[in-house]
Length: 77
Image (cartoon, rainbow, N blue to C red; front, side, top):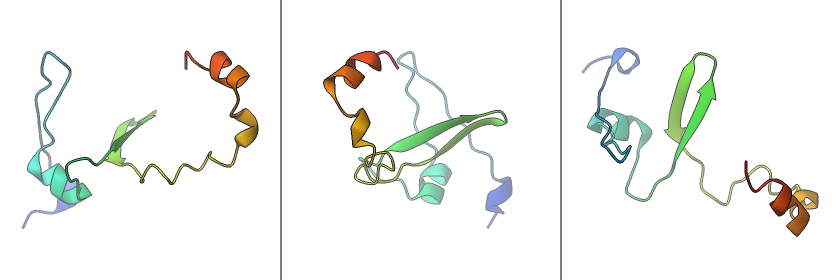
């Protein structure tokens, strides 16, 4: 079995900017239908991983930012 640290996989992007995750990637991340992915842009490149469940938002505690004025001010972000 190949060393996962050195495995390379490829996919194409469709005209709708869609792609299919290669089997090696789905297996490594334990991706199933309906799972969400997280894309983190870093100075070294893009990191893709399985997103935590939606209920595990670390910013949910910041209720002082959860009002109609904030929704309007941050709507374009």
